[in-house]
Length: 333
Image (cartoon, rainbow, N blue to C red; front, side, top):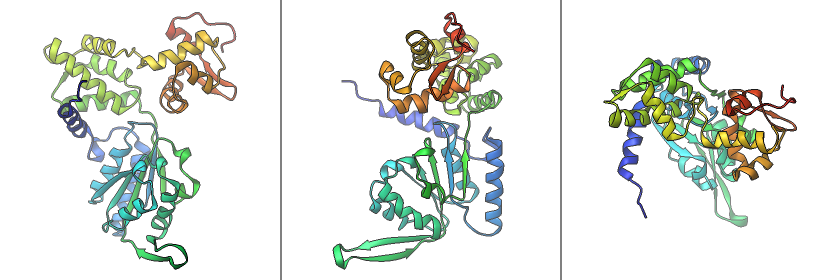
């Protein structure tokens, strides 16, 4: 049995942190969100108050955590980090809130996975900075009220629909992070290459950006793998040939489609005659979870126009047939 290389994982984590923007000036894309956040932060600082509670949602790797840390830096506030799965019991939430410091930011990742009983403890904390603790059991139980200092909760989720209405309503502002523009991904790749001290050609930047699924995290991941290939085979220079070879090794095509993406399209086209086909039937055919199809695979395919999601089911578009090099049938539009 091969043991995981913890040292290598630590190195990757350090590199990822190094590439993460820490200032507004370095954060590329999501311009409307940045404008609104900077307004909220500037207004809060002028009033000598903490920033209102914030909720970020969108696909993985779009910059939700990065935004939280930039806000912390702008507010000169310490950030305490936790995640939804860690908040299983009401006592878990109470333990964190009872130790929160004045002006601190509590960042909750994967907020949709907070246990519902634990979630109820958050309601008064978000709304009126109150923490209610139940002491004792049975008829002798009593409730204690604890006043909390001014603090900000920033929650991030990839599945905002799984957050309850009462929890969503207690955030002062909600922001949806969308896929990035190609030109923004290109800027991110250039910036990351400079930080990594890697020489990269304009053509390589373009190739990487087109395969990065409009997502900064994917762009940086592909850049690091191209850097590895260039270091071993190409005198440390990342050019178009290096990127093409890197993508071939990773089984990623020129549009950024991975094996799971191509397999889903292939099944819709060849097994279900282009659709419509229900997501449960697709999950069975792919041997994949429904949630993975809906949250990971489909959004990108829909964004680049290869898949339509209709009430009757999923339909492969004409562009999907062209990409798979399969003759289209007449019912396609």
